[in-house]
Length: 154
Length: 240
Figure 1 (cartoon, rainbow over the protein chains, first blue to last red):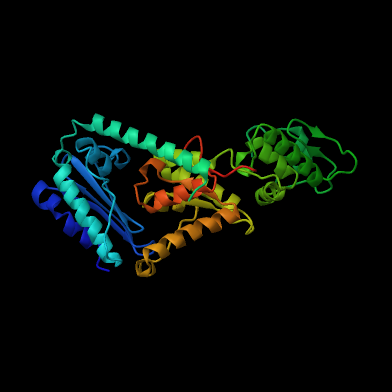
Figure 2 (cartoon, each protein chain N blue to C red):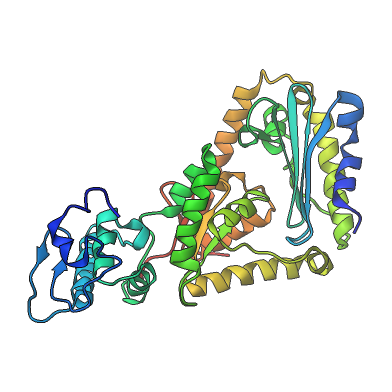
């Protein structure tokens, strides 16, 4: 497979070229499933792209705050565009690992560019609303977990 | 050695250093409040077993089971006087068929340490403690399995000496999605069978749809595990 850091950089180069982001941290771990993390920051905004066991996820937040407080782009998109489908649903016919990773990178880079522009440019005026979306999602998750525990279905 | 112990007469027989000069004859023993003259020929070791037993029962009645790290300094000291090492005591707790369990949760303190500025110092202290208690003892000792999102779970596992699901990239990438999932679940099944503890390095709410972390959590919940009050480890299913 091609170097994952190069792949991530390639798909998210719009942040560097168009919005003055730079890569502040990158890490690839060939010993642990090839997991990787790339952090890009502008003066106002930070974006963290994570590859964990074959799944890409993205968080975005104010550059001055800890990454733990950044928002998942699923919550961001749900706040701005409540009718859009789930961000992390990836359906592709290919079973090739690299194809699957690139498929995710492309979809998420498009989503970030098209639906998270306000945050990319450093406008976090909607962060209260995003937090509400996050809280609602977490509450649903907890309910679901409790049901799984009760039903013991898997 | 706890503060103030040096001057106590009760340890004069071992030159005020009962840990180093433990009384091998068993002619004197100390429990949590007092020191006693010999009774019925019990050795310090036998007496210490009783102390541990009493201690354990007291805590168990309160719903608490205590490994070495859960004892206070004086309790540890008393056990050491009785000839108990940390490993022996933990073995005793683990093998006493009492369903020993981490109610006094080291993971909670670890998470505080990770969140705070004293990460390194606490990590060293707690990492050493957890290592000694759970990972470097006999093979039947449970492990701490660290779950979460990359790279949090790896960082925490490194600090506490926990174990993570880990396969080299070249092997991982050659597997089908079904094989990858099956391997991940097999790792959990083996951990469940060993009675391992599951520590959550990332908040469960960070588990994205379709992620391996979410799959792991849902799998463990389906096996009856529930989230701890501090939401940083999983409570195993109780007896049915």
